[in-house]
Length: 378
Image 1 (cartoon, helix red, strand yellow):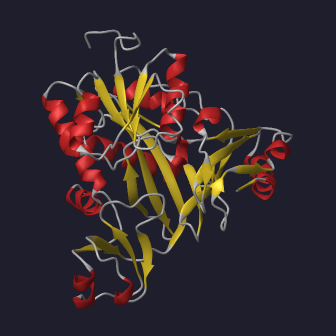
Image 2 (image 1 turned 90 degrees about the horizontal axis):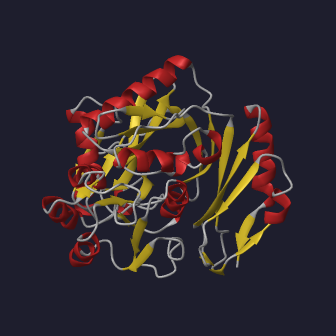
């Protein structure tokens, strides 16, 4: 790169200005890296702390071109961006990580699943459908998991489909229900030199109503054999994608011991928030290192940890009030992260709490107290 990566003249653009971008900025400050953010919400969590903030549509071609034209490197905080604009910027010499072709593969869950099949990545059996009419005419063994191919996020666009009348009327995929024992996550990073590094395994527990991760802990309660297998699949996946950046790989651990890739995300991920306190290098620092082709950081776990999402309470919408925040601050090993979102709504991610301790049992006990103590109302 012609300019020093942490000089004020080296401009890194980030499409998306939510909580992931906010935590990316917090890590960037330590290395004096300058991040310029773009988000359609003028009050986005990054709006007041970015080196510069542009309010604009990250899905509009012209807006993304205008934003990216003076940047040396552009990355993303969310997959739902204008890929055609990123391709144009890449042709003009702007580095785009993860690469637009990778985003194109991952953004459409149908293309993503087909990639797994084509490259021998284990995943649940699936079929693609164009709309609700296709579903009605199909021979489907209900129930199945149905996912919209594009546009889904934070549990939206995913449902348990029990009858064709309830189908999404949009391009979708239906996959077989998996009799799984656990849901796991491995976050893996790769830089331009081809160096690859995995973070320790994470075990996730979901809120069944919101279909969001509510609670996770690391290390996962799995054997070393399963851990090694998951790491191997994650590394294989990022290398077959030929991707530069950070990749979250979500797995089903089946009751027979098989590992199946559920979904992937080409960015910092909810299942890696705990790395800020629990690892030598956080996922956010690793993302910056990978896209800047810096040496990848040591990902060892310093201590066991758990992470709880702070979600907006059901039935409340409006200016956010955090109840119980002072109470949890009295507990040992508790690290709250409040995202700075002005308004709450049901199941909106408003923050998270990381809990660290000497043992996973200790961490889980304190996590239960945190879950009981904090909520967001209006």
